[in-house]
Every structure is written in structure tokens, then in C-alpha cells.
Image 1 (tube, rainbow, N blue to C red):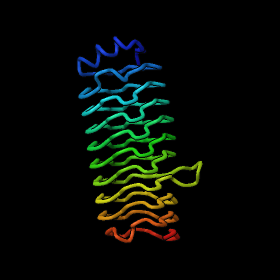
Image 2 (image 1 turned 135 degrees about the horizontal axis):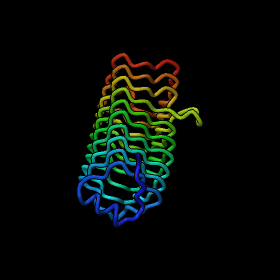
Image 3 (image 1 turned 30 degrees about the vertical axis):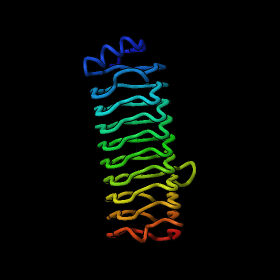
Length: 215
């Protein structure tokens, strides 16, 4: 059961207490609210403004975000479990140092987003435009990148340098000019991927699948 909460002052009171739980928030402007260090559990955000918000160390449990504007938002050191983001703008958002599990980013603009040093487990990027995104130093386990509409996930120019990728699915992805220098790829599926002008040859590959990949 979700309680509707749309007044900024009411939302701010809950956040100042350190917790926001079991509510549905629609068409609210949260850019100036104190989201850092907050615990957000079983909350639905729809058409909410998060642009440039500071949400460092935030904890998200079973949170849904639909149609949000979160360009240049800072979610550094975020802890997220069962987070689902759909149809939103997270261009140049910063998730550095975060840990995400069992989460999904669907049909969302994430160009130049930063995931440096993050740990990403059992997470799906479905129809998320990640061109220019930075995953350097990140650990990705059992995560998948896809876009049924385009026929391939857009990871053009992504930075995976010094990252560790384990059992990840990049089948058919566009990884043109992607940087894999110093990366470790174990059981990574790159079949049918576009790896033209990428540095995949400099990565340590352990049982990586490159059938029909364009190198």
C-alpha cells in the first residue's frame, strides 16, 4: 500500500528524518531536497525532477523511477537493491562508488554517465543509451546490455579500463571505440558485437565469446 505524497515540504520532513518509505511521489521537484544519506524503501517516483540533486550515500530498496529528469544528478556511493529506472533522463549522472544488485535501467538516456569504481550485480541495461559512459575500475557480475528496438545496445566509446567483467552479456552491442585497457573479461559474451577501434585485444580474456564479433 502506497501513500501519495506530492508536497515538497512534506517530503522534506520525511527525508530529514532519514527515511522515506511506502509512498508514491508524482510530479514533484526534488532538486533542492536533502537526499544525501537518506534511506528510501518501497517508493515510486513518477515524473519527478532530480536534476543536479546531491544524493550521496543514499540507500534505495525496491524503488521505481519512471519518467524522471535526473541530468547531472549525483548518486555517488549509492546502495541500491531492486531499483528500476524507466523512461528517464540520467545523462551525465554520477553513480561512482555505488553498489547495485538486481536492478534495471530501461529505455533511459545515460550518455556520459559515470559508474567508476562501482559494483554492479545481476543488473539489466535494456534500451539504455550508455554511449560515452565510464565504467573504469568497476566490477560487473551477471549483468546484461541489450536494446530490442535498435537491435543492439549503444555502448559507443564506453570506458571499461581496469574493470572486472564476469559472466556479462554484451551480445550484439555497439562497442565501437570502447576502452578495455587493463580490464579482465571472464565468461563475457561478446558474440555479434561491434568492437571496431576498441582496445579489446589488450584486455585479459578468460573464456570470452567473440563469435561473429566485428573486430
